[in-house]
Each structure stands twice: as structure tokens, then as C-alpha cells.
Image (cartoon, rainbow, N blue to C red; front, side, top):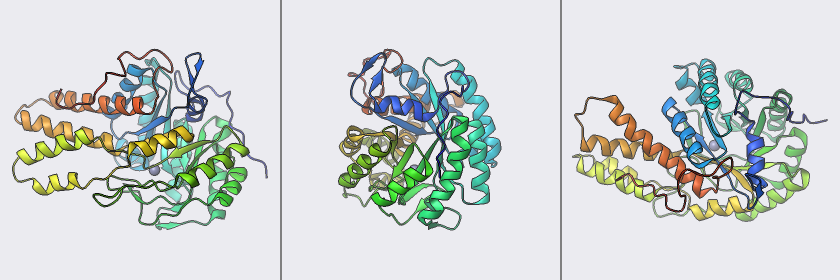
Length: 378
Ligand SMILES: [Zn+2]
């Protein structure tokens, strides 16, 4: 059975590229006309127009390659309940914004699937409106159970056959990732990726981006307080080596790669505690557990070039809003709160892009990356 080759000649709207093209550049360590160490593209899950704008500004500040990701529930939010309509809004909005951009970007459907009727509709629409899709067929989301390898391969290959001729890159998933991503994507179980299954999955489907399961988790609670998330680096390396032998253009993706910004957590807790009897809310913040950055950094060094991050950016937004309400809770001006949360989001994205080494790719950064500090008190 032959696999569909990604058509790299397709022209997307101005400054829009398939995610795979931008991430492959990161894997090869290409920045400007130089080649150095690999870096990663944090894929930012956005749910609002403000989020899109903040991500775009962060990419432009740093001269980064950008991936903006939309989950099914984000698409529904943009479409006021209708994910298909949401994708049309996203398409038109991002196309216009990208035409004004100083850097190229990719748009990506996060955790699409090709299993249920609605999933099949959404992923087909995403192939028409975005530049990259994830076909997460390792889980039957509607029935909340893992699928067989055979079902995963068939469903993923079908998406690759639809998307690759149109130049749209496809990310597959092998293994089941535990944790809560959003109301549409969650699992209580986690199964590691099996290397032999991986070989069959990659050679049969032809996907060029793969999310293996190596111990990362979705959501803000990646363990009990005090726990450390332990990634299976040995398995990650085995899988990477195998994939590179099959096709060196295959990209590995780390899901659930959010770390916590401790200064943001502290800022939120301080504001909650001073707002009156919100101690249970503050306690919830205290219980958030992320993945240590040094483990994610290790994955990037080993060749994971797309890292999905969402939680810490949402936390930064909310922490900034809490601070704004605490300092001026009677200012009747939406723009005041929007400016504060917007700046916080931009800074959160800038911080993550710097950590991932994704700056100076298309032009020199407009700030000194060594001096940048994410600080909500400023
Ligand atoms: Zn995910």
C-alpha cells in the first residue's frame, strides 16, 4: 500500500505554511541563512481572537516560526457552538492577520479525529481551512476508549490521503495520553507507545508528524502536589531513532508539555488570598503540577520539535486578570482589562518561544532575549 506524499508545492495564503515545513526547519536548526542546533516550535492552543493576536505579536517580536493550534472545542467557541463555522471564522481572520505579518505561521487542528461522524466532518473542514491537522485516532473520543492499532492506522491513513495532496501536514498519535485537555479530549488511562507498532504505523500511514506517548500528561494537574512528572526518555529515544531511519523528515511532537511559571502561580495566589475568602481557589492553584522544563528541554535536544503548550498561557492570562481586578475592580472599561491580559499572554508566549530556542528565525528579535523577564508585577 503506497503512502501519500506531502505536496510541498501548494501555495497557501500569504505568510502561511504547512506546520511540517516550519517544524522541519527547526529540526534542521535553520535560522536565517545559518544552521545550528535544533529548536522547537511551541504550538500555542488559542481559544479567542485575543489569543491569536497575542501569539502573532510574540512571533513578530522574536522573528519566530509560529504554530497556532485550535482544539475542537476552540473551533466550537469561535463558531458559537458550531465547529465547522468556527473554522471558517478562524480561516478568514488568520489569513488577514498573516498577510500583515513579518513571519510565516501555520494553523493546526489539535486533536481532530477521523472516527466519529462529527470528528470526520471537522477534520475535513480543517483540511480546507487550516494548513495542518492532527488526526488523533488512538482514542475513540465519543466512546472514551482506546482504538486498535488497525483502526488507528486506517483512520489516520485516510486523513493523510486527503490532506497530503493539498499540502496540509498531518500529525498522528500512537499510544493514549492521560489527563484532561479540554471537555472534548480527556482520558484517565495512559499507554506507552510500542516501538514495533510505531514502525508499522509510520510506514503504513505516511504521517510526517507523530505524537508518541512517553509519560507527558494533559492539563494543569500532571501529578499529585510534590510529585515530579517522569518522562520515559529511553523510550522516546528508541522511537526517535526508529522514525529517523524510516524518514528523517518525521517530526516528533510532545503533547501535555506545559511547564508552570512559578512566578505566575505565586502572583495568582497572592491576589486570590487578598481578594477575601477565596482560599479554596488559592488552594487549587497551589495544587497545579507541571512538567519540569529540563525534561522538556531534554526532549527538544533529542529531536522533539513541536511542543504543545496551553496551560501555562491560560494561567498567565487568569493571573493577570486577577491582579487587574484586585488593583482596579471598578474601572468600567473593557480595554483596560484586555490590555493587561493581552500583554500577559504576549509575555507568556515570548517566554516559551525563548525557552524553546525559537527566535531569530526570520529576522532578528526586536528585544534582547537574554534580558527578557516574564513578570506580571511590571
Ligand atoms: Zn494533546
